[in-house]
Length: 536
Image (tube, rainbow, N blue to C red; front, side, top):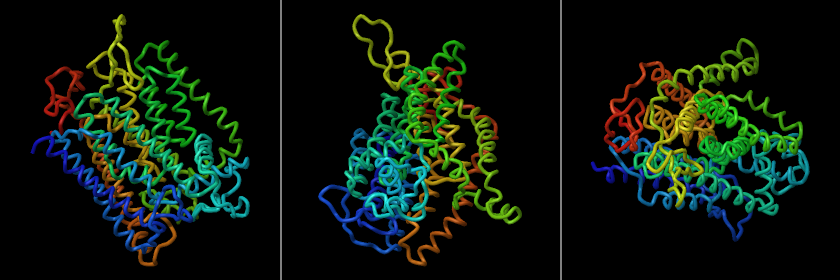
């Protein structure tokens, strides 16, 4: 099978999966799609067909399952030398456009985002006032929040609240228009992620192929982040920008990192990864770059938290006690609670998961440290300037060079930290994986690829149809059983597989070199795919 032939299969599966997901959203209000009120001339549009919960569940089962198959097929195609489609940005743009023309699917989180933005826009405190209590629940935007979050104040950072205010203002107080504004913002963020990754890869064919499969044409990511319209994609764009700009634009990187952390706290892991990348620089240089980054982050976070007020921290502690049904932690917590009483295990779960995350990361960094990293893109030096120039997202030392050690190490550390965190986090939802895919897509192939594909597929299937209302009794029983019993076992299997891989002897690639000649373990001839080492 030729590289071009191998590359066609995952694209077809991805298109099929996206069509199933978009088609479900186009049907309108259902167990998977929260209603947005009366139709309007502007998007998002839907058919108001009112499909039964069993139908949307079956179609989504096919959609998410086909998406997982697209990713697995894509990984096999990559191993056989598949290349990215020639019109990759155009294909991604078409998929994104289709998803912003229909209502969000898979949860009612976007309604909570808009409610918090609406409350803050009016000058009230979304961290103190639950949406259903604000104006007695009569507001057309804030009153649209759905179970189980009607009486939950905001759990998001102040930068997230500011972005939510922006969407509500663009919507002019109309629920459907505000939703569309939010969807456009999420779509732009996903497009920015793809652009940054492709800019980093440059002309490296194998690297672009990995980005195509794992991010740009990933139906599970597109479905959860763009069609699902989740805040996580906005935070992911800021976090990835911070990671890639840290070496050459530390102040900008700090600003972006502050924005990401000000939306969702786990993005502080990106800052830890950047510090890891700086560790081999001369102390004075490292302190200078780190200090400028810290100042940039504080320039965002200090005024943001001052604007949000002291209650912005209230929900952070409460959210840290949540444990998802679809993770192995829930079963363990339930067993401990039988002895200690209701919620008795909750205070210990997050610290324990943090310790396990750190231990696994320490073990995994040895393996991931051997993986190549996609090179940056260097601009040609202008006339009269003999020195090399770097673009915003690249650290190459000139045309055709590989990435600098600082940025490469930061990317590896970000991939390890984010992967270990989402793998072992007690509260896990499919869209939380936005933190992982960007850094992993810039690495060479490893077991991490299969692990994140398997885990995300399991979580997508576990949380269908998406809402906690609108289901028939049998649909509710069947989906809850899958979420409660099947998903934790499968997630645990992925965890065990990763731990065994991490504890095994370090891989020793025989010819693991990048296309530009920068070897992962020393100089050697080019690999069979033209740069990225192939699995044995």
